[in-house]
Amino acid sequence: MSNIVMNIRSVAEDDTGEVAVSYTGNDVTYGELWAQTGQFAAGLNDRGIGEGDRVAVYLPNVPQFVTAFHGTLRTGGVVVPMNPQYKSREIGHLLSDSGAQVVVTLSDLVPFVDEVRDDTDVEHVVTVGQETEGGIDFEAFLGDDDPEIVDRAPDDVAAQPYTSGTTGRPKGVQLTHRNLSSNANTAADLIPNGIQTDDKQLGVLPLFHIYGMTVVMNAALFNGAAYYPLPEWDAQEAVSLIEDERLTLMHGVPAMYNDIINQPNAEEFDLSSVRLAGVGGSGIPVEVLRRFEDLYDVNIYEGYGLTETSPITHFNSPEQGRRVGSIGRPLPSVDAKIVDDDFAERPRIEEGPVDEDEVDLDEITGELVVAGPNVMKGYARLPDANEEAFTEQNGKRWFHTGDIGYWDENDFFYVVDRKKDMINTAGYNVYPREVEELLFEHEGVADAAVVGIPDDRRGETVNAFVVPVPDIEETPEELKQYCLDNLAEYKHPREVEFVEELPRTTTGKVQKFELRETEATK
Image (cartoon, rainbow, N blue to C red; front, top):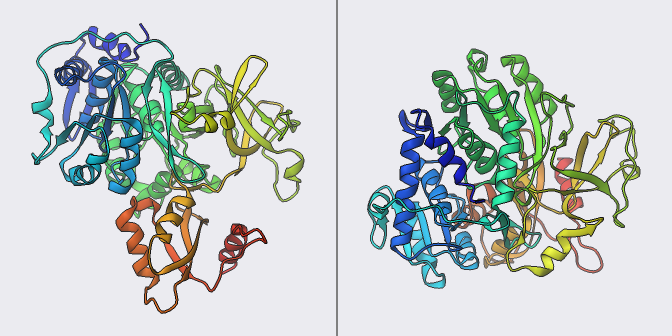
């Protein structure tokens, strides 16, 4: 049987009373968690939801996410994780494209589901919190039976998170039981001596995101450790939890580590219980890494991955050495290389990182491509996108990451740029086209372009350049609020600048590099 929920059953069968999930001081043991997943699975079965059916989990990091995720897998279903910051505009496509029949969400988010429900296959809305009209309370949804685990093949889809393409239209990423199992177990093995049953994992990375789902939640639960979820990021709250509960493992995006070291009482924090700190989502500034390590005597190990790769492909393993500025070496099960446009390997340098001011990067860089058991089955119902994303060579199926980098003779890899226009802000991916399309819907906008601007805290911020419609009295602040009302908070432009015209090529393409350069010189 290849259903990855078997990993949790194996831990629960030991019945040692170990804590699986600890939330706001309330502990759930592995035995209790297993029973809860069975009740959720029974609730799905009672309503005719089973093998291959999609269940959307539209929740922050709360225990019900864990129960719904693994309860869905018990029935042979497919989890569709959705960002709880999304509004109706954003979840509409995810629900209709996935064909989800059930949505599990907070009561406060039900109105967003209701706005788009008629255009989807959603039959049941399960609510966490206060009862709402048209929704079923989470506890009331649970069934009484203890259903058998539905057998799944290794290549059967287990989860379908969404990632945006260059057009901004989200694509369903089909991750199989093999994908998720291999990456969660490898992530655990990267830690010295592996994840142990007495480890305690900080769970602040969002569970709808593949990093939080695989590397944090599943890696901990599959190995009998305790998972401590936090529904939102707050540096003081996270550090207090580490201190009070003596947490041993933490993962975060660079902005989180930057927030910790910039707290007014940063020098007072006690992180001595942490035996490994991982970072991903985007490159961490070297100065942030070094200051954190100087303050707390805890090394930060940088890695790299994508939703399409479940996610980790590279990591600076403590046992194999670390190279600051590198994304690390490929995982033991992953093949990786740097190729040119003809898919020929680019030459390796002797040792990195290089001084980018002294080396012609064009001579050593190419696109990072990867192959392995963690690489997705493909994008759901998008054959053209799949053809573009993969290259078959020498019996291997190579995935094009879209990132530009180089490699050295010690097999360390370095990412220097993105091939596409994606903006990475505080670990979240924002695609300019999505924001631009929303701006174009506003009657006061004649033309618009969105770019990422370097930012010390977030890595990048979203900036919009707008050509206003004459005689329409709209202010930049009002346009910012318009975006905030219709998009997740992290996607809205931090700055909106009115310009007379956008720089374009003769074919009409906006020259975004000019906008970035103009902003950088201010």
